[in-house]
Image (cartoon, rainbow, N blue to C red; front, side, top):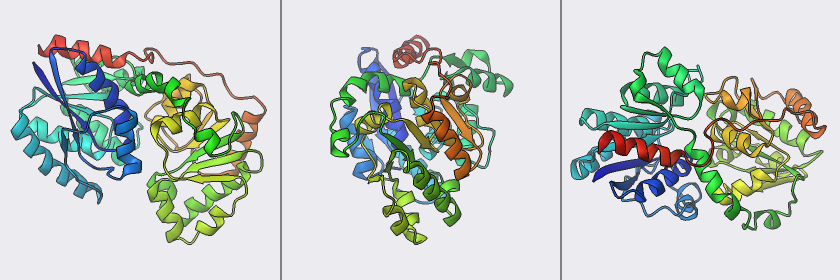
Length: 366
């Protein structure tokens, strides 16, 4: 048996590990266990995802919680080391770019246990982002690097990574989307929020660069107010964003916007249903860039760079360097006028990436 420990820490990880764990359980050669570090630890950001994605209760819950990047990384390393001493796995599998990804990678490598990094090779070129550092450092010591798009292959080659470590397999996030697309249609979220297809825009904002200052929040308010003149705006508000609206005394202005549908963070199925029926998504999320590209929904991303360039090159994503309400308004009107580009689905985003990863790991580790 090949024993694999799969690491989840924050909300985006769950949709990536769920199809992997499902594929591993279908292989008699693999014993798959899930370690939840607890970086996202409340029910809205964690528990509901395990339930909807039909993932088993984590074999280990580290209870790391919040804190500074250093604090979260250090606590995760200390707690994960205890798990490795008990389990002695053949492989530690990490996904994405959150602090748990780097922390568990470092502990595994120092314990002489190989690491597989799913979603490897992605680069934004912006080292001021903690996620960029996590990606670079994790890739530099991982034994198996699983790639979602051609830019990942190119980046790792440029960094001198041997070809035999690199596997272009596609996107596990799309595996979850394909698997649950029909189930998402059965949710009542549109009726609950009194929405119809193509009658609304979805806005998500959580990155510190956008929501940690009053100037950033005021720009978000202007964007929502402008957009709400034409379509309803659904804002599933991230806890960090909600706290900052209160902190800077802007909650009343937000709640007073006519046409705004303000909700708590949505479950995976509900948010998937919201995305596939929206006119446009306005976001600063990484994963949403990929999901909207697959769903062929126009997406405006508030970042001056992206680690997922395929979503811009052939997908439906457009980058906006700053939160300029005037620019957003112009782009939004283009979408309403039907002037947006028609995106393509990238190679190997077909719902079978996890199966390819399972096959490769069995071949390499058996």
